[in-house]
Image (cartoon, rainbow, N blue to C red; front, side, top):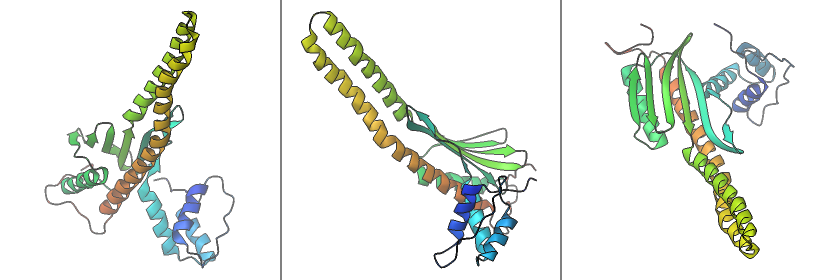
Length: 238
């Protein structure tokens, strides 16, 4: 199994989680290919940071999973996704517990499905699934903001209408009405865009926080010491 290496941003986040104000900031070597946990623990120890705190901070970061670049349209976020490696496959009971956590976190009932080893839960464009990988299991979370996409479309349509209608009104010999047409259709277009600019980033941040919470919960639940499947419960690749 490939040794996990942490990039510069991840290293800073780990030491931010592991340190307090009374500890000097560790000096980091310039390594383009990242640092292993052992290397981070040694660096932290030299700076007076307990290696256990560094390891705990790294585990916390790992539990959040990998956040993919936010999908955008016309500059506003419309899609958020995250993937996290799981310690093992959930049992039937643990899967039900994860579903309960998803319903509580996202505030919707959703629908659970199982097909050929893939377990999933969804509500509209919001998707949560446990998938087999070459190295074990992973949790995938993704969502799509249909309202933001619709508002983008509305802004485009009415923006185009404002221009085309104004041109038609002027060509018809009524230039005095062109301003009114621009104000009407253009106002709708601007309102749609402004709503997206205000609401979409807040939506993306909220969804990312919710996905992080679900990912951390799943990893912590499955990593509990002594956790074992109940008799007859389903396992990953057994």
